[in-house]
Amino acid sequence: MKISGALSGYYFMVLILAGIFIIICIFLIRHMVLDFRRKRRGLHQFFTCHGKERWGPQIKVKEWQRTAIRHLIAQRDTLDNDTWQMKNRRNNLAEMEQVESKKLSALETSRPNSKVDADIQKSMFNDFEITRSRAKLEDLRNRIQQKDTLIRSMEQARQRVNKCLKAYSKGENPRLPVLNYIRGLFFDLH
Figure 1 (cartoon, rainbow, N blue to C red):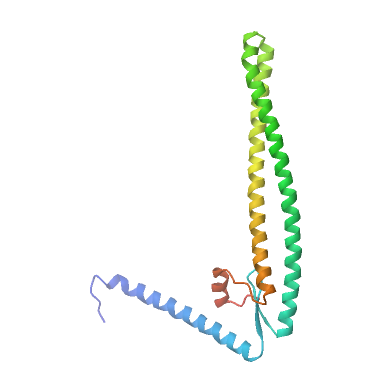
Figure 2 (cartoon, one colour):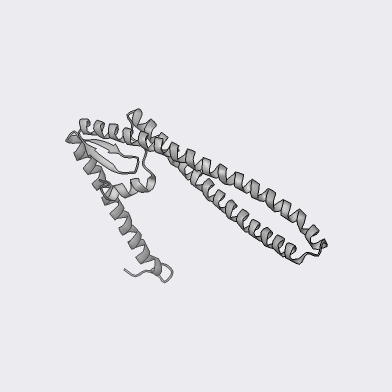
């Protein structure tokens, strides 16, 4: 079969896309058949919050859920303690920043006075103290920003833990992230 010049470049691309589509369909069908066989054997599905998929008898699934709930409660308590400590450290750094900014403003107001007095050593020391104070202030601001990002990520982790706990306490399985679910279509996530 001969194809005209305009379509000849797309012929192989269409074949490749058709092959990829067929492979995806085969894996989807394989996954559905495996699920059907497991359900016929009386196995139930269990998703962990970390995205893993397990199959087992009903008693085993209930035990996995209880273990997951205990683990999540411990994780939530640890996150609460760590977040509290991180917030305290951040507040301490903010207080240090306020003290340092007051010190810097006092140094900058005394700067013109030292130049008027024509005391070279005092003005050089004052300039040194100002640059040191600015560097310290910049370092404190960077550390506060790092603490803020850590606190935000810990609070997001706590929200995920709470969402998983709600799902487990209702007897449901938490929803998998889409990427893990797609990966689960091709591989068993044990």
